[in-house]
Image (tube, rainbow, N blue to C red):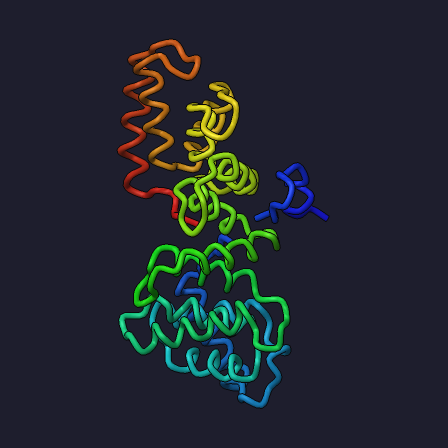
Length: 276
């Protein structure tokens, strides 16, 4: 079974190893709502949370996040009160960016409950990522708490969350909540990059280009920039353009290639890769 534990077996001693969830389009969520009504109306709160599949919970999450659909909100709240960890996480995520301050606070409470259950059970990695990210970035009414963010992100990363690995890389690179450590930053970026996070590919490319926490390796840096550029990350496309202009990273100076990459930069800025 593939996991971050096996993929990062070579991590320094004592280092615990570190969803990018896909939002459900509003149209499909609305379709799910129509089906639910057609087959017999909304589920009663008495129905056990385990009977609700992940697809239904994700549909309700999308409806709450995108349109604050009242019946979807009611269903998620009922499931969350009944102890459903997936529902608590979904509801917390959906409410965290609400314009209503009371709803944002409610979202944080549900994420807290899912990330660190009172019964001592393992927390939900998705909730740990969402709450850890909010504490790191200071999202909405959530104040910065770097040590707690580091703790939550480490928990999520240890359970295989690639996005959590990326944010840990940022924290170790800049010394948020911990001593700055470029080798550890590169370590976490490497794990996230291997699991498809374009921003991590870019950060790791920078490390190899500069020899920052890893041995300097221009060929590896170039490959990572190209990989991130394929995901339409503007910073990576721009880095390639400058490499062609200046003859860096083992490339021969090429004005035509520079212009092509520069135009591609403008294109990617219109629909850049989303942050994890």
